[in-house]
Length: 251
Length: 346
Ligand SMILES: Nc1ncnc2c1ncn2[C@@H]1O[C@H](COP(=O)(O)OP(=O)(O)O)[C@@H](O)[C@H]1O
Ligand SMILES: [Mg+2]
Image (cartoon, rainbow over all chains, first blue to last red; front, top):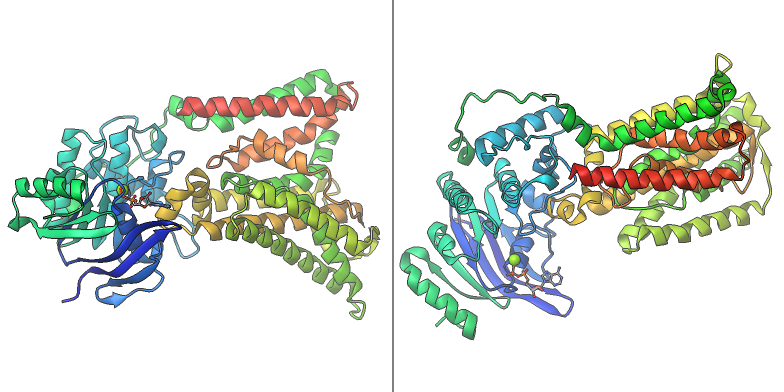
């Protein structure tokens, strides 16, 4: 069976900076892949190629076995990719409902917005998924006034709202409280149960180990190695990560 | 999706009702309330200091006759500024639109009907305005040049083009008075209500819908707020920015036609003198210089304040020398007010 998503020999450079070198990567059906690697290893660049934000300097991107030339963000979203970016990609001066539907507004054939439905959906998501209790938070409140955790919640719920097949989470637990983090980890498990696929990037090796089926380690723009979580203990994984950080080699 | 329905704690969630809270209303609409306050405050000052002028209807019909020429451009300019961009070239586009108009009229002598020629000329003006706006957008987006700088350049270029193409000549447009376009564009309903005011209202309503109830406007706000977020979420930021410049180009050419019809004359200097009024209307109306924030209502009121100041300074017995000083004072104070209100809103 075809992979949900596959990268073949993907390289990316930003002028002089070679961010990724000949990456071969795949994401299976109903698989959660964890990406680990030091700051600046190239994790965010890699997922931004999958979301169509960056164009690879060379290499191929395949969705369900089909080569997609000139992938754009809107094409990737149509193909079922939703992303929680490390930057969160929010518009702070705008209202919550506009942020939830950013770039995917509910509209009729003339492009006129269905404002009421977007507010209703936002309200439902807020209460059922985000667990926002603060009275200051409603569909009309401005995201700039939210706490860090609340902003994160907006970015996460937005990615989950659209019925995505592939959910990419780039450092989603950064800045979250313990309780919020636990909730997020449950979310990611829910993605698995719902039969979807996900890519999960986190600094915390334990979180990644707890939710991922497979872990891919990236170092200085190349894939240093990969393991199935069921074949490795958390302790061994930690040791290997330290070794990569020190020597650039897994073994 | 299923990951969420599992989470649902209250399956019988009531639909969302917007409850009214005065505090929240004031906080979220502070900018618009501020400009309404300034508008009414100044109006009272005008009435008190020059009751003869400001209590008669004559001055209001005069305002409705002259303010729309720049106010209609302030509507799309508001969108440009909300998108985080700037345009200084629209006064020259007014001129270029009328160059296209005059040239098409002059070169269609073989057509008998004056009306047909004027309609063709009118369409040519609108098309050339859109094209120049599009070109502004392309220069800014494709070459990544800051719009302030790019449009300083195109402002000079197109004014120069107007002068070169007309060789500095003036054109009398008395022939337009025989066509239906004359009463439709600048006639007076019932002999006193100016049609340009009707056009301003139409463009303002259309602009409001586009900005607040259409996907295009949603993207304009998002781009001005955080262009990287907009890009990450798949908005064609370049395309939207090109379109706002095109829209301003189109409306500027239209404004140029309106004004030239009004005086039945085309001067190559057409548009000079509208730059600051139009910009001031937008900023006075509470549109943020930093992008992402702004309203059509604010701009609309801002334009009338700007338009009234000149008449008011003269009517209150001050010399015309005071006009600019008062302009400047009101603009600086209102921009400070808007910035302060925005900080408080968080
Ligand atoms: N837009 C960009 N322009 C130039 N260099 C970039 C850009 N994005 C990332 N880089 C560089 O690419 C490398 C990988 O960055 P990134 O993918 O963000 O790493 P990670 O997410 O693993 O911390 C870094 O050296 C970073 O400086
Ligand atoms: Mg990163």
